[in-house]
Structures are given as structure tokens and as C-alpha cells.
Length: 427
Ligand code: GLY
Image (tube, rainbow, N blue to C red; front, side):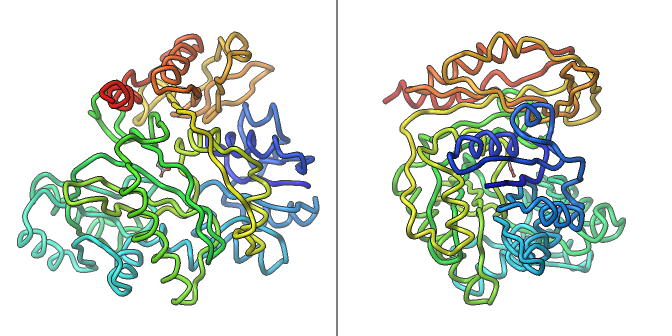
């Protein structure tokens, strides 16, 4: 089988790594890929948003299955284009990807189908949005409705902050068309967790839960990033919480999408907050998470290709999906300055030393090869990932490897999975 993976980050390296283990996968291409992916797949010089170019490539190379990592091509309709050209793709349609592409679509779908949802209102008029904010008070959350590279959300601690974000979206065009509609919603307080599922539109099979660390600094301080580390499973997600998220939120949402004529096929990611009132849906994403994939797929005890192929064929009910009991921890090594400005092109050392370490995997996020030398090429550079029978072992392995790999201005958080180790010790 020939696979094409679309994307260039740590998530795509992890997908490539796992699919390369499949006995039925002969060749993997990745567009555009990165310096680490290039070691196990053939990188293709096509951008993830070049939908026509990707379809041409898949047709020309007789690709058996295309797997899409990032949200932008999904929301732009890559699945629809591939379907028109009879090309097999693991991806939701553009209509189904509205679950990530439009926050108001998702909240309104949940409200219409009586699925547990938080308080929210949708606005295109700034004065009306501000009046609602003043009526509700702060803290309150203001979100640009569409995709804004993770930057369109303001968790406003004051009414003035909320009003400024409304102005940025609706009056100043700060997020272009993505910000022409805003959603104002209640502020959720609690630990974050995510549960992703495989679904063929009918059968839903959950993956193991994970917890991501978004702020740049230890103790969750500083600006948000794409994710500075992650671990799985999550002690705070007990079986009752897990069942609630899967059976009361995700399954009814997938059923609602089918009822609405937009069946959802692919990976659906439920980002939740564990509040005092129970788990609440923060957002859906129409894809695997990054860096969540780096801690979830190493725990998959089986052949990912079989699962993806069955999902696309509407036969997910025929596949037995198992997970290991391992703990998995991923520590992201970032370029100093990220998520603001940072330099690239810094030579990376130490990878050969950790290459043979037991249960340690280095997933590349922002790397490139320049004149034979591996160099940094992004804000998030590497996801240093380790498995272990306890959180403590997995965490120690990951941090030992993180210390060994080096580049100028390397930065990483030192508290990833600390909370899980403490929960483990307190029994
Ligand atoms: N790590 C968050 C995301 O993938 O959306």
C-alpha cells in the first residue's frame, strides 16, 4: 500500500512512524514533511493547503490512502476534492469539518440537538456583542468564529478586555473573514483534557485520553502555544468522566451530524474542561491533536493502517482496537522566543546518542536538513516522547532525552506530567 500524509509537524511524524510499522504499508510520502519524516518517508514539495496539487500527486502516484494532519486543508474541503476524483482519503468532508471550522456551528448544533453545552451567544454586530458582555460580566470568553491559527480566542478577565477583542474581530478585521462573526461564551475553569475518536460516521471508537500543556511557561504562565507537552492517560479522567465525554458528548454529536446530512468520518477530537460541574466541551477539532498524537499513537497496540482503511470503508465495527497500559509523556523542545519571534537554522545535536534508548521516540516538529546537517526550522522543534510502566519512569526517560538533545536557545517546560506523577504517588 502507498500512503500520502499531509502536513509537516510532530503529529505527522508520529502518524508516519506508526503507519510505517504496518505490514501492509510499502511506501509513505509526506507533503511537505520535515527533517525527521524524511528519514522514514519520501518528502514531497507540496504545501498542505495545495489541495489540487495533492490530489494530482495522489492520482499520479496511485496512492491507496491519504491521511490529513492539519485543519486548514480539511476545512478547505480536501476530502470533497479527493472524493470527486475517486481518491481514498481519511478525512471529514468540508461540511463535517465545520465542527472545527465554525465555533458557532458547533455550539448551535449542540443546542439544537439537546447535547450538553455551555452558555453562549453569536454576534456579527459589535454593539450587541458588547451589550451581552456587559450583561454577563467577566471573566468571559470571546472567540473569532473561524480558523485563526489558534489566536482568535480571548479569555477576558475584564469587560474591557472582552470589548477590545470584539472590536478587534468585528470592527478592525483582525482575523479577516474568520473574525466576522464572534461567539461569546462562559468561561470554563478546570483541568483540560482531550479524547479523540475514530469514527466512520456510525461506529465510534475512542482513543485513550491525553492532557496538553498550552502556555509557554512552567505553572501554566505566559502566552499560549500550539502545545508544549502532553501525557496519556490522564489520572483526572476517571471511567465515569471518560464515559460521559464519549457517550453524552461525542456519540450524540456524530449522530447529530448524520441527521443533519453531514456524516462525520475521520478523527474527531473533543477538547474538554473538567469543571466542578463535570466535564464540559470546550471545542471540537476535526483531526488528530498535536502534540496529543505523540502520546496517543505510541500506546496503540495494533495496526493503524487497518483502522484508517476500515474507517474510510465504513467498516470500523469490524476492527478490534486495543491500547497498552503504558504511560506516555512528550516534552516539546522549542526555539527560544517561541511563541513570539525566534530564530531558525540552529544545528541540532545529540539525536544519535538517544536513538537507541529504550522506549524513547523523538518526533520532529520544526526541523529541516541543510547541507547534510539537521537544523531547527520552526517554533516547536522536537517532541521528545517516552513510554514507561509508570508516569515517573516515562517522565524521567523523556526529560533525560530532552536534556541530551541540544540546539542554541533550546527551551522546554520542566513540569510536563508532574501532576500525573503526583496523582500516581498519592494513589
Ligand atoms: N494541541 C492542541 C491541538 O492540537 O489543537
